[in-house]
Length: 230
Length: 230
DNA sequence: GGTTTGTATATTGTCGACATTTAGGCAAAG
DNA sequence: CTTTGCCTAAATGTCGACAATATACAAACC
Image (cartoon, rainbow over all chains, first blue to last red):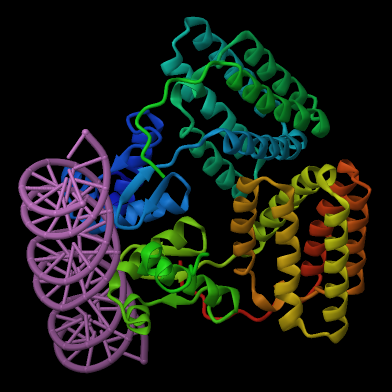
């Protein structure tokens, strides 16, 4: 009943919105990495628009913590270095923990079945070793858990935290994913949720994130790129 | 050594930043309430600037969840109604809980002394019944706890959540503050922190927020203002 | 009388241009 | 050879204006 594709887009989405999403996409796929500068004129021309909507998009990205605006100097993709990386993982651990506690009592047989489907899909892709596919799938799995938890505000904050994780040096963010340990923790999370035990589910999700951080830091940091001074 | 006031401001802060902070201030002090429309030309003239920086400020406020942009219709102060209000309090309870757990082991005698000072100040102002003074003091107290917890990212997310609380109908957000029950919980929080017990501190802070929500909902909702349709 | 159509006004979305500032190169002075 | 100063180019901050959309009101029609 709703075409929703052709003109509803132009009726609801402004150019600034599209630019914002496009840039977020570039960050998520690694085309833009921490420290990169975003030239307003370049991006305006790339999208065939003027600078005004680009600037609005960049302002929104700044508020989301993805870029850093330096007056009269330019916009740079934020870089998350060590003190902050740990902070971010601790925060995400707490958010995931909350999601586990909320979701557990809501798990129905249908939800349990869906979660086991996710496990199979994750295991299948992990077996191929194709990180380019596993990476977004893993994020989608965790995002789905948050959505199922039923607190939209929590999901919004969680997504903001997850977006920032892409600002870690990509080489690192990927490492340790899809490992047997990570798979095992996924199964433990689903198992706890299936028993509808809030405390166990919360603990499993929290621990999974903290272990993910441990797997991250034990991998050698990638060599630094250009580092805009200051 | 640093004047930091006169020209450092103009060197680092753009007009859009100032406008953004100004509007946030209007929301915090209640001059702007949920549902109000923000006319771009009006605010541009009020601050003596053009629409461009105003629009950038509004984009940032949208990303922070404080306003809602409707294409070709305008910008409106977001309204937080019942399902979302509960979500927000649950989230804040979790963030405060995390802060309590982080802060407890860091409490030194100096910090304990500072916290007791806060208690006295809060009790003093609460005794006067002057909510206009108690209200920001209470927020500053909780903010201070977050800062002392030492996780800057957590503090940032917490502040974003707190900012949104101002979008609850102000009549409600104030009610229940400074009550004996609230004061008692403050003392329990500081007591737990002083013993450096992470679990007890986390629980006290969590419960304080959840009780605050309970005190909120048991007060009659203020009559609605204009409600922009859709 | 109620509904619809048409028009006028106001507001937003976007654009192009100007002023200001920064970054870098080059030359002159030390 | 280093440093200082100036100058040029590029990029950002801000502005005013135009086009497109939505809202309000009035007229016309059933």
